[in-house]
Length: 432
View (cartoon, rainbow, N blue to C red):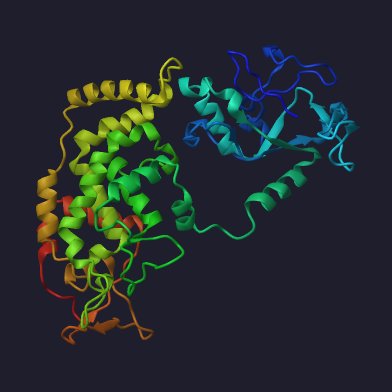
């Protein structure tokens, strides 16, 4: 059993400083925290920075996933397990499992390398510095599994077995089940009542292939688009917290409403008879284009979004334990708004100008200007791959839809540039 300090100045998992001696929970000097114990210089594996910890919501009783750690060979002789027995529910002295020993494990003050569960450990440290969490620390239960007498080679193999092998989880399925994260809640509220509502691929039902029309994008892409809209793609999903949602939601809603207004009429499901599926026809049906448009919107709203993004960063460096996380963020947001007002940061275009450009652009994939950006598919003999439109029977070049950073950046830059009208041409790419 690993004890947790409950003193006012300690919220970290701690261990006895001397093997075999009793440990008073209030004895701060005998404690050693994970951050010191798992210092990168003592650990061959990377340590998760606590600033990237997930946004934990304290419930009546919060039981975190098991944290796993290793101890080295040299400290094994100083590890002591004090076996204890206790009365079970039937009365009488007994252990619930006759094949196991129960008691208190005492470890020497020496490095303990954390092998798994770094994210939840970092998250506990993170929330413990907020006023809300400090009132409810007794409701947080932490389980620590320690492997004793482990060599460096064995530790490396155990790490690989736990983290590097096995089947990978479907990212869209995980997102669909995750209803508590701030980014998931932001996505749900931003898309509610829009053309995207009910048309996100979740990894179980419909997909987002060229011929599929039920879903516009998948859940993972939707969250990447949101990230581009709100932060320019500079933040990770775990950096979005619940107290950020209200500040970000109006801009997220506005962006998806713009997409619905301009493109919603072309995202038809099912496709009418004699008409190709929308993704076969239009660039804006593909993730790379929507991500590029999201980045362009972020630039158009930079004066409003830059202070919010800056506050999301600065709140980590200016924590006040007397304030709630929301109060701390709002205080930093006020400061950042004043600083950015002095900079007078100007957007390259306005949101209205962006809307006008998106409406004017010719989005058919086989137009010459899009083939120049996205390139085209080729046959085995090296010639251009073509297809025939269902509506007219005309032969057109098959465009690629590469969801790469280079293509996304190229589309964004073209939309924002003075030469954006090049995208309005109606000339098709040549067939040969």
